[in-house]
Amino acid sequence: MSIIEGSSTNDIIIEYVGKADGVIITARISGNNGWLKPGEASVMVTGKIKTYGGGTIVNVLATSNGTPIADFPTNGGEYVIDNIKADTTIVITAMDSNGKSNTKTIPVMIKIDNIPPTVHNVTAMAEELKIKFSATGYDNESGLKHFSYTISPEEGLPIDKVAGTFLPGQEVEIISTTETTYTIAIKAIDNCNNITETPKTESVKTEKIVLTVDQEVVYVGTGDTKKVTATIEASDIKNRELEWISNNPEIAEISQDGMITGKKVGTTTIMVRSKGNNNIYCLITAKVGETLDLDTIPLEYVEGTTTGTLSRAPLKLTISTGNNWARYEMTLPEGVSRVSAEGMYGGPINRCYIGVSFMDGGELVRIKLYGQESGTNWPIGVKSADVPAGVEKRFELMLARQDYNRWPVQFQIDKIVLFYD
Image 1 (tube, rainbow, N blue to C red):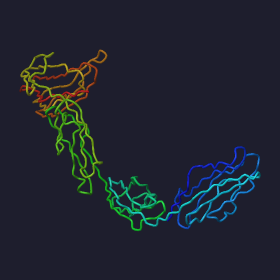
Image 2: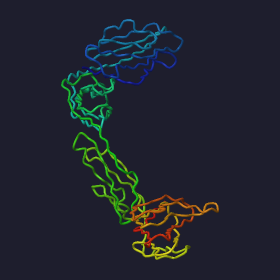
Image 3: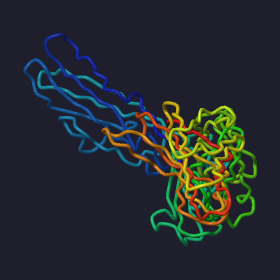
Image 4: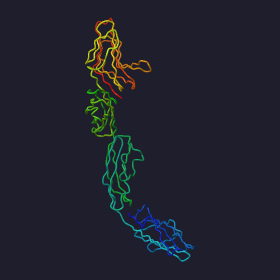
């Protein structure tokens, strides 16, 4: 292969003899961006030939290594000189009708580069069904132009992505539609169009990876724990191992089996991802609420036919006799957006209600966490409700006993947790 070099890639003005008349020649060379094949080397001479002083151009002579170049234009313009095989000197001489002349000499040097470039390294990987690869290479003389690649098998690949070219430093991304092992073969091409004889290959395996979690938002009180279950489907065993990360462990910690522990009131993000492929992940929002001290919360009797008996830790309201009822309330702190009551238990046959109330345009609005008309002893578990912002809210607990009840009735709450905006 060969490389062509000219004396300049910029216009060069040759000053004419005399100040009032003469010939001016502007010339430059170019050819295939400077890189040419052996035996097919060509140079394009682009020039302007002008005369000053009232004369006209009467003769233009161009030679290549002393041999006249036929049909060289007398008014300049573009002219291609073909089949340059060795170092060449192009000389252009112009004369006007007043006998003034000027000469422009353009040296053209040919260098031979027949050494194929090498592919040093191929970096290839698969992210699920996405194939990514790049390469580095080296050439002694003319420099790398680009790399070429082919991928086999063709199954699952876009037809226009099975083969192609890419530049040094470029990363190629191709999306497959199937799980299989692909072999990528890469060659290097230099600026003299030499090409690597034996390609460098790398294999990657695509797979479908599906990661899911059983909950995307977790509410947990300070000091409490909640379990998140993640399920991953992957054909490669190294991608099935999971890693759990908390964005802010001061708010919520996460164990490697998905157990979230509330540490401080606030909100943070929990990530679970594949250890073998960090681009496969799910995000869980962890909201940590304030767990109230049941011994000190200001829950007070507000109305009813009896005060009943209110005991604490756990919080338990009991009505022993008669067709009686009682309601207790407390004002919630500003900024509460969600209330959760946990570990509730009622019995034996009663009517009970817990919820949050607030005033809206002069009307009392109640949001029920739980309400039961009648029933036998039952565990209720956790009940939560979102509540509006910007209004004063009160937490309510009400219990009623009917005459036909043979036993005292009671309602119990083990924990109250407040979540904030």
